[in-house]
Length: 535
Ligand code: G4P
Image 1 (cartoon, rainbow, N blue to C red):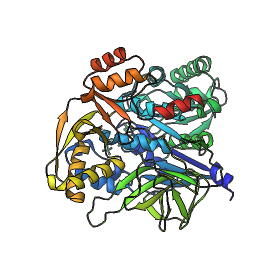
Image 2: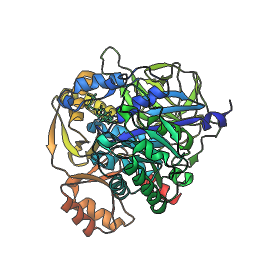
Image 3: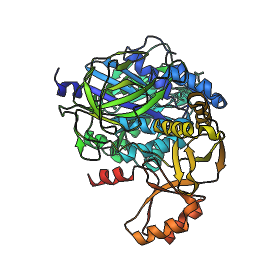
């Protein structure tokens, strides 16, 4: 198969949702339909339950298991589907954000009872940054959920995307009769039998057909006729390009647990979702069909078992063909590297892979050479910059408890933050190290790993910061003044970019007013964003 053919059959995507909306269930059902697993329940162990928050070792154990399910590849018809798993646990949200840099599209799962929730908003913000195409799956239609029009309006408004229903529900909850596919003009009747796939698909080309009354009852049939007319009048027509540009989000309704609406979703997904897309690097735009191989590391998974200190770096292939045992150029370290046992992931299995193509994700065993964002090429000096860091939510100062182990502590905290466990900000004044995370769990992880892997002992002192904002300005005078006035609130990230640690929303607002020429950025990706907007 040629490079072009390999690219056109690949679909690399992520499933995102607020915890409990049904991401795990949907993933599992997609794998079942794809023939990648045979029984339900196989993916469940991957889920980190909320109850386990206080026991991070338990979580890490589960994360260990989840290495195998970090990428779930399967063949479906003529397509090769790569699902990139995103951790559901909120404390690992940064992992999810990074994974979203490696996908070409997403399926967003929304619980029809709860609608748009907090994590949904944050995840969609990340998708909006790159105009990632989104398909919405409104789940749990077997429950007494909200009115579908309200749900769509809420999604449009809160997630700044234009929805376009491609299927429409008939009834909801105990009265849920099924869905009408507005695209294929078929009626699918709901059976509520978890053990079976609904095969009840009936072609209904014309909704005026009196047979419709027989299938769903006269009242529901009339309601569907009205709804269909209204939808055609109110919503813009489905346009593939608008979807692929991330402007229009097709919507499906279903019930993952009941296998309802899932096959339909998958069938449409493989047809409309984009194949591997170009990637913006600092120097230029990389197209997947370029012959020379390029790839970047978006996730690093450390093995916490002291007997196996290896790490796996997850590399997304962006262009060309990757081959085992060939030398590639590690652009940050400026050296040649070779991988004798790269792995790919097929549902619950991983196996050594000889070659891989754009859109694929391979696991590279690593002894400390990689950090997030590292780039591999055939010799060209390129650097992926699109891996965002968001302003952390919790800040603590790292305090060394054993002065004899200062070096180990320095090395340890640098390596752990390279892996993306947390963000590190260093204040020039006194070389104070502020660690920022999105969840409390990471502090436990760091403390434990610094002791276990580096022999360093530390303590964390809470810092009452509200946000960390990267800042830039062309006005040197204002910038200099800001540095002089705010030394206690300024630190540098690992790339040596200045960051303002603000104690409150009010202080941030004050700073913005006092220094109007200074731009404050809430993600580290501001440079790429600007570039993307220009594009
Ligand atoms: P998540 O990965 O997004 O966190 O969600 P997950 O799939 O684990 O689903 C969360 C809960 O919602 C699960 O119940 C699951 O069975 C249920 N669920 C998923 N899809 C549907 C659906 O279409 N209809 C209904 N009614 N429920 C659905 P749980 O009680 O938390 O877990 P479990 O005991 O069933 O494993």
